[in-house]
Image 1 (cartoon, one colour):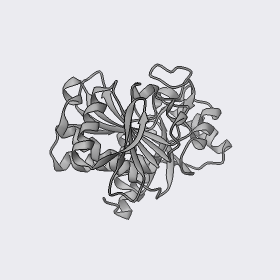
Image 2 (spheres, rainbow, N blue to C red; image 1 turned 90 degrees about the vertical axis):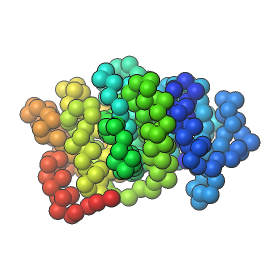
Image 3 (tube, rainbow, N blue to C red; image 1 turned 180 degrees about the horizontal axis):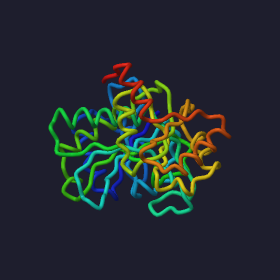
Length: 287
């Protein structure tokens, strides 16, 4: 079983849920979750459920008390300081000893890189097809939930009230969520280091190579990142990590030296992102 998670406390989530129900056939299972009907996607060879929580998605640490699926896909809003329209996906976790937006400090969710890739590629493709004035972004690991043992990712609609109500964009996010929840593991999985919160170089990995990205630690956490957290990132991946990728332009020299030392101690190969992308271009990978 795989589960789509909507929230009554999140306007964008409500919009995406409506778009799911408008585009796909769901039937009631007879079960309830927090008083809301549990729905099942019809005409699918995978058991896909849609549940609705009253909690904000970032605080939904309780789902496994009733559900034990293979994967959670959260339907969520995105908020940014710029307010720029965006379609986004990412995995969850807090790298540092703070947890300002849900989850526990220095804790990571289980990252399903293959599902992130499916969501990101679908968002990119459909935004282009429908000529949506939305920027498609891959984000680094951030916010909760972090305690769930089930792999999970967020698929988001942002970044203001106007976009949270936009059903054309909501339809695209709904389709991306379905593609994510149906995705199967394939390709090698990497962890990433460097760059900003929106990580276009790692997004390029998903666009141009067969790789999938699990956890990504941005430049702003690297000075305080330690071996324990890197080890946790390796352990909290739904698929084995093949190697690490470092964004050299998105890191300082002392940060690269620190991360490389940690990776050497963990016997994990580190590669430059520009070299990996060049290899991807040579393979002429497309989707």
